[in-house]
Amino acid sequence: MLLGLIGKPSAGKSTFFKAATMAEVAIASYPFTTIKANHGVGYVKIDCIDKEFNVQCNPNHGFCIHGKRFVPVEILDVAGLVPGASEGKGLGNQFLDDLRQADVFIHILDVSGTTDEGGKKTENYNPEKDIVFLEEELDKWYYGILIKAWKSFSRKVEQEKQKFTEAVTKQFSGLKVKEEQVKSVLLKSNFPEKASTWDAEILMRFASALRKESKPMIIAANKIDLEKSQENYERLKARFPNLIFIPCSADSELALREAAKIGLIEYIPGEKDFEVKEGLNEKQKQALESIKKNVLEKFDNTGTGVQAILNCAVFDLLKYVAIFPASATKLKDSKGNILPDCFLMPPSSTALDFAYFLHTDFGKNFIKAIDARTKKALGKSYELKNLDALEIITG
Image 1 (cartoon, rainbow, N blue to C red):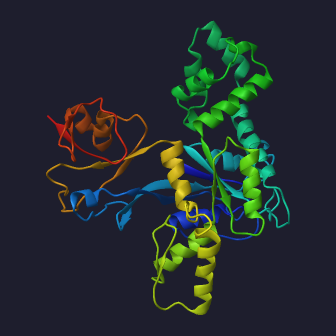
Image 2: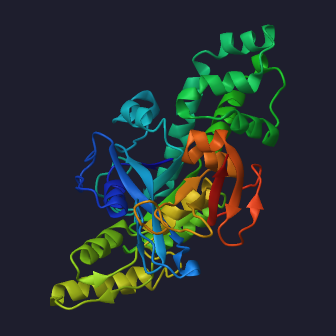
Image 3: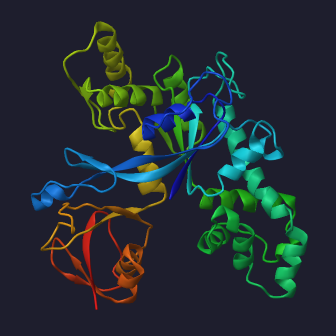
């Protein structure tokens, strides 16, 4: 699973990326700070099940703080997108190529209106423009892939009686488009039956619908703590009721994580408060108090927004579930680590899918799964639920 950070230059993508991953990346107030894509590991936050079993977990991957388990996900930060990117303007071609493997987009939007469409400093810019142009550029990207071979493609499908959904899936295979997603688009919208009769307008409508289905998106309303941000944020939610917005201050999250890293505060990412330790100077105290007052207390359901956005992308948009391999009688692995693993599985995954995910031999020799909580036996078709703890029995 790959989460792609997108948006115009200077919107705060690299700051969000560093806050989410604590990776060392270049951050500056001028456009195109990011030239090559940054890959890093961020984390989604779930309730750990260790307390249910009265144990303390020892994660192999990720970490656990006071019962909050952080499970790794891959994050990609790409060069800023400007109007005309689909025609190669800015770093558009590289940007779009980097994004092919993303499963979900996080649009880092400068909601403050202090940077223009190219990422340069300004005042009273309308961030609505950024949403409109970014959606258009992504739609044009999909349209460009579709139109390249459309005439011969559509005729061939009809003449050779190929399955349309299979043919479209093949055309978009480089973007991880699944046939179920193509089917879903066709079911939701009324497109003419004969593809060869589709004109440019219908093709664009189809490309847009397929893009939204295969690359769902959440908007991080970044720089929410600046002067005109909240006013802009409320206006954007009213203007685009079908889009998902979460208020965000990547700067604040980065400051809190860095303060926690050097022991100045105790902070669990995504929480609405932190505990101050000893040794803060007056300047540090004022900075932390400002974050608490202008971000955490104003938006206490989402904290700084960074963790809430990652969780929303994985669990709400992609609908993944977190699953613990665990035995009802033995919670340790061979090295003595307790509940060492937690894995993210796609929606509608079954106990058999989980067995294959753990090891091919587990899948081939699957007999049943055992629920570690209830000790109940589960068949191969059992659909996984979030925070399940399962043992795979093989023969």
